[in-house]
Image (cartoon, rainbow, N blue to C red):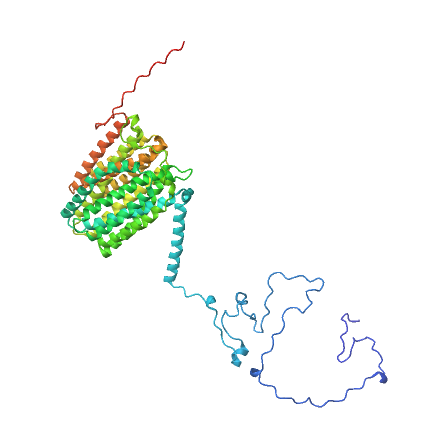
Length: 576
């Protein structure tokens, strides 16, 4: 049986088994080539390590391979051919185009021949420095600072504030708050913490006596003078900063003698003048679509933040160099504020069409616009709350110092907690007030006064530092809400021609109420229940006055301007 396996070729013969081979005859055989001798001996081959480097072998397909029919390009990057050891040849793909970088090793021929040398990378392509914890923290702080500055600039220029001039006024207002905070820190270190309780009480009382009495006489004059100021409002704002810079330097050289008090009086008057001027300028820089309530809330928020930051720096200067160093720092802030005031747009100088206002009813031919009843109700309610905040500012400070005379660290801690509560309340009040419309302003103002008076009653019944912190929180929140309500009422009730003057007069009245409250806080004994009982009664009486003004009455006599009798109209002549 024949096998199915194909026959194998025989070794040494061409073709397969069974295949008919050609019959080669003798004539067809080729002669064998003659035997050759041994190959010629040339020069000896040098050792392998002395051989010159050979050019690299060409890689990839031969020339013309891509032009063959049916060829398609491969998908993705071509793989690197493996070396005999299985490792890929050449540098990594990230370093293929950078011959001077990578691991920096030389090739075998260069290393063995000694002709090659390692080249340093260019200066701009050096490897990054080693990242330490300090360097990472510095980079993170720089990034966070840049983000914070960018967020601040976006907030300051939002809603078209950079085009209307509100941003420039915001920067100047921030510096005004910063200067006031630095002055307060410097004077507190001089008048309050540098002496015992009785001595510091006498110093602060003398300070308020010298400053409050003249200010009470000067404040009613500031409003009319500013009303008559037709040009130069930017210059007046800048002068308020420049004058404070000069007086801060005077106080730095006379912080321990009688020269401190006249300089402090001038600083207070210039500070309140800026507040009045700012209130008169703000309606001129309102962006389109933004109300005056929102604008004032924004200015207050930015100012409080600046006061907290720069006040902390002033405290650091006072701790390192004393009150003179903090006052010199304050003078530098005033110079910056002077420059910022001059950057306010020029259109705030325009006073065309403005009509001055009066706090009492005036005759029609007096040329002044009387405040409406809702505005007067809001003014009385705000004054009641400002009286409480001014009282708390100095009363709590003296009580804390009297109760912890031997522990300065505890004094600072308790005062810091009270100040933090007041700041939280103020920010909260501004945020809530900016989102309200205040349709029923009289009831809202009465509610704020009632809440402030109730907190004082609670502190009188349950005396202690914790109830004092509660009063600071409630008083600051209600003060911010009442002030936002007052701004809304003035914007709604007063004609546009007299709003600037109305804001200036209202700020003057509120500042006077705060100063008198501070004087009352100095005069009270350092006992919680006595002080809070007195201030609660006064706030309740002013709240009652607020309610009676809304009903058309009053607890205090009012100056009613006599109206000139109007001539009776003549009957029209008959025509025949």
